[in-house]
Length: 200
Image (cartoon, rainbow, N blue to C red; front, side, top):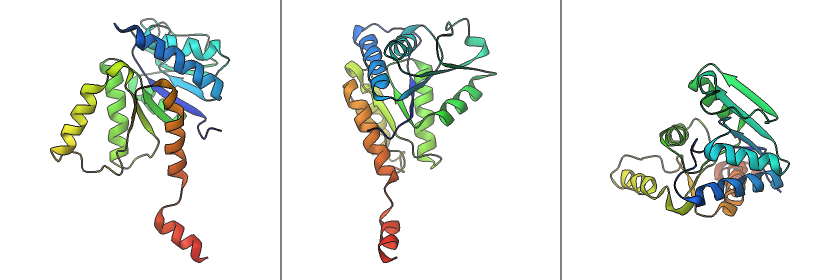
């Protein structure tokens, strides 16, 4: 059983140089569909984005593509999605992606993927949301970022570990179980709330 209705996935509009990246996108698409979890993503039909969405659709899943007007041609809008939202700009795109998702996953990608992931980490650190965030470290792609985050923490620049909790996994089949566990944990009452409930 899953607590997640939909997952927002950030990933590249290119395929990358390692075939493991495309394989991971396809496999995660299948797992999303078979688990009944909808995909919220950037709306394109190319690169890892396209492979992921096509796999979800191929296996009978639901896809919501959210894309700004200026990228409709460049990233080849995937018109087969059950729902397509064309936004005025990137800010509106990211806001709607956030609103439509219960959790966030970063597959390999470029600057745009990194920016979207870091924004969610920032919002979590500032206490603006508690939705699970997972870094899918396919073939070690995100090793440098994980090392940088550890360096920032050791150097005293990440102060809110309790709020900026992110998950990291290397195997695609671990993603949904880890997100579900994190979502279930968030639904548990805090120790203070639990004590008040027990007194009633």
